Image 1 (tube, rainbow, N blue to C red):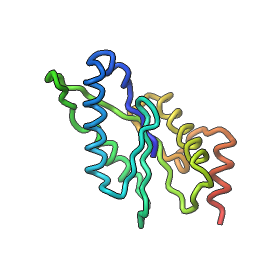
Image 2: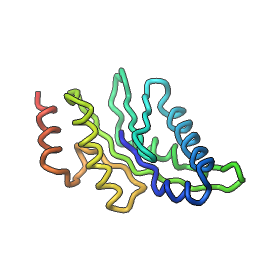
Image 3: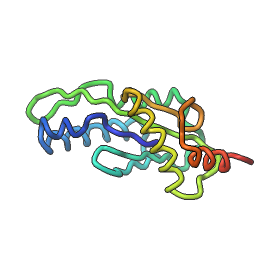
Image 4: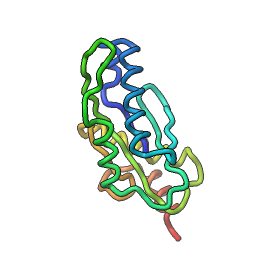
Length: 149
């Protein structure tokens, strides 16, 4: 799963970096509380994160992903100065039996799907393999080849 905190720069600009740090810390606490220890969360950039579920015996369903989204955005985050900040996220995910050959392949597919979400209003999640979205042909070829048995 790849996710992006919507309008995170605005949080930093309005509340300063301590406010942004509080938002990051709280969102990651919520995510880890929902997913537990089997999840690896890595920060890829200012507001972009990747979540990898390791050694999972099942796939995350679209309902699971919706619940993760809700867990992260369900209530405002209280900042150090007592302001409440409402945060939304945009995300893309993929479930596959076959491991993609490289992290670059996985990231490329998820990044293109995340761009689709952000271009279509944000605050949503998309299944990069099953939802009807327009991915570049290179991403689709990579996905299709990795899922052929």
